[in-house]
Structure formats: C-alpha cells, structure tokens
Image (cartoon, rainbow, N blue to C red; front, side, top):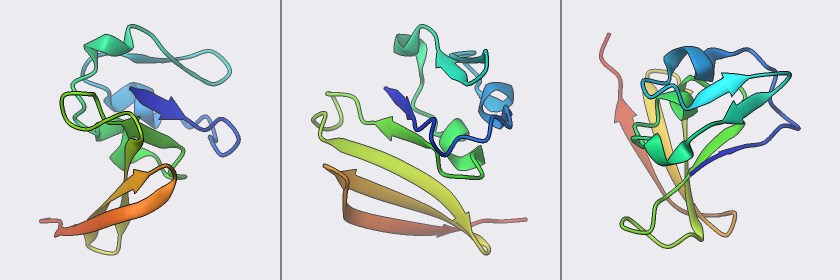
Length: 97
C-alpha cells in the first residue's frame, strides 16, 4: 500500500508521472486509486524529492508494521526498512550513470 504524508508533499507530481500502473493521480494532493494494482516497484518512492511517500509492504512480503522508504544520497540509492516508524535496516546501492 502506498502511504503519502501530505504534510511534507510539495505536489510536484513526479510520483504521478512515473507510476507505471497509473495508481497515483492528483487533485490538490496525490490520491491513490486502485492501490491493489501497485507493483511495489518503488518508482514513486525513489522519485519523491521530500520522502513523502512510503510503501507499506504487502502481507506476502512482511506484516503491515513494515514500511520501506527510498531516497537518493549522492551516487547511491538508500532503501530504509522501518518497523513501526523506527529504522529496522538500511541498504545502499550505487547508481550507475
């Protein structure tokens, strides 16, 4: 499930543009439509400049207490797994140009 924090969302629409499933659309803020179609590809999470989007991992991957956040850090992508809001683990992957 896609979770968007509207308090830090800047309505840049990057998530809507990059979503391959067309799950995210905009009114004033992003709206999730037919979230069950989400591929969990994390494209929206990686593209968000404010880290306002999190993916709540589906039950077949983990229970609903876990979320994943991804963000760019220099030449790396950082994937952070959270459990009840606390960092459980973090992975960094170097990005090719």
